[in-house]
Structure formats: C-alpha cells, structure tokens
Image 1 (cartoon, one colour):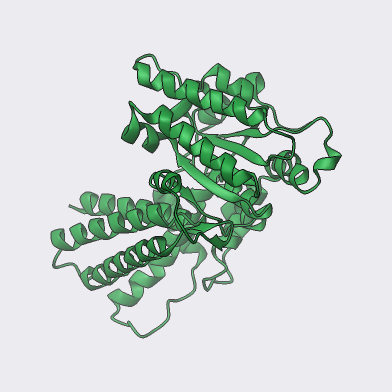
Image 2: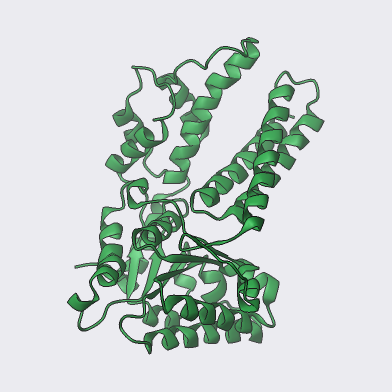
Length: 382
C-alpha cells in the first residue's frame, strides 16, 4: 500500500508544480486546473488512508489547493490583461482566441531565470535589442526563435521573461491542446490566432509562445490530412509575419523537448534555434540558493556539495528536491503533534535523504542526443 501512497503523493506534487509554474507566468486558467487535480488526488489519499495520522494535514492541503483554484478561476473571469491594461469590450474574435490560448502579461523577469546565460544573450540579441532600438538593425533581425532541450530546464520561463522585458502581450499556445481539441478545423484556429496577433501587434510588441511545438509542427509516420493542413497553415502564417514592415514587433517563440520531430520547413523559418541545457554546477548551486531563500536553512547545508551531487537534475527537479526536504520538517511537526511550532531548519541530511529516492530526470544519453541534433541544426550566437 505504501507504493500506492507514494505514487499519489508524487502525482499530486507534479500537478502542484505545474500549477505554480503556470501561476508564475500568469496562466491562471491552467494553474487552476492543475490545483484542482492536485486537490482531487490528495482527497483520494484521504479516502484510501483514513487512519493515517497525516489525514488532517492532507485535508487542509487539499482545501487550500481547491480554494486557490477557485480564486484563480474567478480572477480569470473578471477580465483578461492585455499588456497590463484592461480590455473594456471583448471582440468576437478575441472571445474565440481566448478560449484556447492565454493572453496575459507575465510577471516573471530575467533575474528569475537562473543560469542559461548564453540562451539569455541570444534572446536579448534577437528580441530585446531590436525592439528597443530597431534603427540599429538595418538588415532586420530573427523574428522566429526555437528553444529546444530537456524538459524542466526553463524554456517556458525564458519566453515569459522576455515578454516582460519588452512589455509585450504574451500569447501562450498549447500546441498539443490545440490539435486535440480542434483537429479538422485547427488550421482556421491558427489563422485566427495570427490574425489577432497582427491586430494587437500594430500598436504593441507580441510574443507568441508555442509550447510543445512538435505536437503542432512535428512530422510522424502515421498522420491524417488535417495535421498536414495545420502545419502548412502555420508555416504560411509565419511567412505572412515576415512580409510585414521591420517595425512590426511580433515574435514567435516555439519550445520543444523533441526537436528531431519538427518539420524541416518549420526549422528553415526559425533562424534562431537555441539549446536550453540542464543547469551546470554553478547554476545548480544558484538554484538551491534561490529556492531555499524562503526557508530556514541549517548551517551544515553545503550548497556546493549538493550542486556536485545533482548532475543530470533539471531546474524543476531541484525545486522539487527543496520542497520535499522542507516537507520532511513539516511532517515532523505533525507527527509530534506540535502544530503551533515552527518547522526546524532544513538540514543537509534532509537533502541527502531526498536525493536517495529522487533520481535525475536527464541522462547523459539524452544530452548527447540534443547535442548531436544541435550540431546539425542549432543556430544560436557566435
């Protein structure tokens, strides 16, 4: 039974992580959905382990997630933020677009993205500098950028951060969701999305972020005609953006964990193809310091040693490790029935115990695969 409990706990943590990531970048609708899923799974734990001493804390946590989901749903109904301003009247086209993508200015900034210095510089060169001083780029600049690499390493956060840096409207498109919901008329939806971007982009920079781009623009051995039509429509729309004047600040940033599945025509249109690697040792140390800054940390915690022992761990993995280490201190409070006390500081032993059970999500073989693809198709900075 303990295996089932651990599975449910891990699944709940996964949904909470997804919720927090979406909340950080302003995606309230998806954040609410993930908080709801986490609450439902914790309620399953309660139902399956009614005699467990942790039941009362599980219930409190589930109620908190459900409450946060409801708050986010209410906030998303009030209005939708476009570049920080409230839309007074919804156009029919806007209603359609907003039904399956996020249009909101994210709150995350470049300083919130740990490491990735080369990727940040490539983004600055391609997006930030031209937007702020287009007169310095007489030959133009890349408007389509591909971010590729292992999951959990910061692709979504980086796209959100650049939107905030240039005060852009952030349009987040979930490619897989678009295909699954609208296959058969998805090409019309793609045209509507780009049409809306052009309308907004006439007066304000726009970042169109296509998550899981291989789901929309990948080539598979078994596909139906609708998928090919959607892919062709997307490429047509990209060409249409390129025909606009040089001061038309619409950028398409696509992210994928599987760049080798992408259509070659798509790759040709993305002049910047930037590898988002796992965090190196220095970045891993910074990530531990960043995620622990809100907790009490024992003097024996050695961030350098933790960074050494977490090679192959993504930024998302490290965040989960910190959360799990902190949860050990909270669990002790409840087991000792000291609910009014504060958790003790997190110790080095807490981290080491978590690492015994938490394995890296990125293998050396996976990294070689990305690096090999990058040698053939990558295009970052000189």
